Amino acid sequence: MTGSPENGRYKQVLVVRSDLKMGKGKIAVQCSHAAVSASEEARKSSLDWWRTWMHEGQSKVAVKVSGLSPILDLERRSRENGLPFYVVRDMGLTQVEPGTVTCIGIGPGPVVKVDLLTGDLPLL
Amino acid sequence: MTGSPENGRYKQVLVVRSDLKMGKGKIAVQCSHAAVSASEEARKSSLDWWRTWMHEGQSKVAVKVSGLSPILDLERRSRENGLPFYVVRDMGLTQVEPGTVTCIGIGPGPVVKVDLLTGDLPLL
Image (cartoon, rainbow over the protein chains, first blue to last red):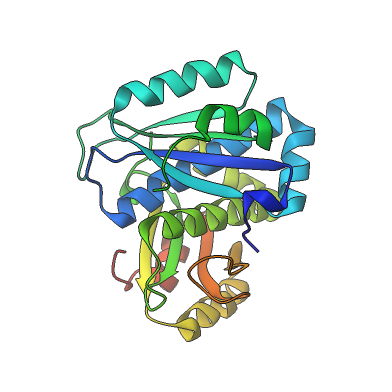
């Protein structure tokens, strides 16, 4: 079951660029890539967080930003705060230019730590 | 980088119910859940497939069906064909009723095997 982040102590946030005007299928694939890769980062670097998040039901939220700069800022702040993350760069075969940064996955990590970075961002 | 399934020998397909009229954020979260969980199934049951898929860049495609029945059919056929899969049931806190099946993730698996089940489905 997928659930609300309020149910658990751990969450993952998928932050998507809305300025690229991607279709819903493209967004779904970019978020899925971020989710798998950030989850894999967590499994390697923060195994306890990953295990608890999986056990709790993998809470995830999708939010949006309007350009590249906020994504790069979130990348830097994730690194500084010790949160697993993954920045997705698309091959650009459809809809966007090759190498375009489309989204970042942050976490799984403790809700309080993740919300410090993403709590103010609007839902996708 | 995310890429086209034609680039690699392995792919994952995310099959979403279009009849539920979910918003793009909801769809992104459901697909991400399917992607992480089906990937985890593959890591446990088909490690060589999972490793190659990750190394190739995690090709993913999002497609759609118009009801529950095609999802359950794909679940049965994935099992019969030895493909890793995961059916997502939503807690129903937003947009859908509790326990609603929203999507299925199939693979990563060999493109030929996955396409046998999903090759005819329209892109999301």
